[in-house]
Image 1 (cartoon, rainbow, N blue to C red):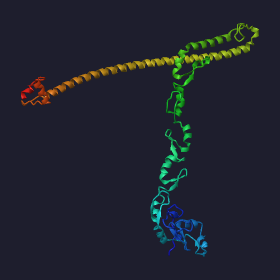
Image 2: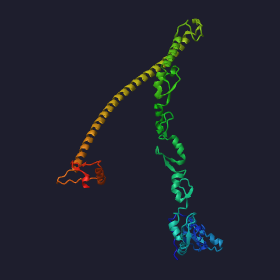
Image 3: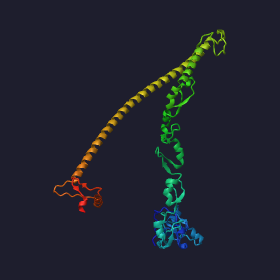
Image 4: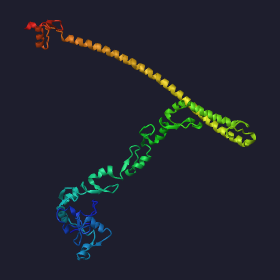
Amino acid sequence: MARVSPAPDPDPAPVGMPQQILAVPMQSKYQCQQCHELLRRPVQALCGHRFCVRCLAQLTSSGPKPCEACRIEEIFEEPLSILNSSDAFPDNAARREIESLPANCPNEGCSWKGLVKEYEAQHEGKCMFDRVPCKACRLLILRSEQEKHSERECEERTLNCKYCKASFNFKDIKAHDEVCQKFPMQCKDCGKKKIPREKFPEHSKSCVKSKVACPFTAVGCRALVEHEKQAEHEQASAQEHLRLLLDCLCQLRRQGDGPGEWQEDSGPGLYCAPEERPTATAASAKLTATLEQKTTALENIVCVLNREVERSSLTLEAFARQHRLDQEKIENLTNKVRQLERSLTLRDMQLSETEQKLRELEYCTHDGVFVWKITEFSRRRQEALAGRAPAMFSPGQFIFSPHLFT
């Protein structure tokens, strides 16, 4: 018999088929001497022992090896018991016997039954009850649930952010949401939703409900007001702001008074003589610094007030202009409504005239024969006999007396 070297097998399975697929008891002649499973594409060595084609190729990949089965059976004999892939030949007879054996699927829940040949060609690697490792997390799952696991359950599955379209693992979804610049946020002040994180700082500055410090904070006002109520606060607290400004100016004036004046810092009702006051240089430097600070604060306040006045003026002008435009639109729409009402009235009149003409045309005759259909003839005849309605008129003013037909 010619020796044939085993050709490379396209099947990636390195071992034989599991013994559990057999529906009959396993016979030793169908068992691979290397993997001890059911022979897959068996080849026979010179010693007579059978191996799976891949098992023998792996066993002799580094060179010829002694047959362990021969040693166990104490029939080792050189050179017959030396395994070499080039000396083995395909055992087609054994293969046909194995392929004709009855088989069933060993996976729990699967009811497939058939022959070993059919199992290897049609069912192996395709059973929906087979457990396969997830490509991402390596967890063993049913083949039928592989798609569901990959899309919904796998902790290592890749997702795309629905806001910024960035890719990340499912386990990092919370960390991504905390840094995503497109993630929608809600303003706690005004309640507005779906504000992108990248635009939230800008919204916080312009939010009409956010609270800011009063512009008169520099002179002592401690109020925190909303953006939209800032003008209202300034109007309502105008007297309080003026009082604070007056106190500030009075304090500046007291600090700028010359020597020999009554000083608040020297205690109530105590006169401070020139020789008792600090040296002129130190006092002058201190006074100058204080005055500069107060002057800067007052200038800032005046600038803020000017901006508020300008903004209010522009807002009033815009409102007045918009009011005029709205009045013009309202007047135009009112005129259009009136025109439409007149048009509808004329159309109703024309429709009524057309209906009248149609009724007249229905009762016209051109051959001298006028057919008048009288509905409820029996009732009208009884009314005529009783004297309640002795006559009725046709559209052509033809007088008809139902009692004539008694």
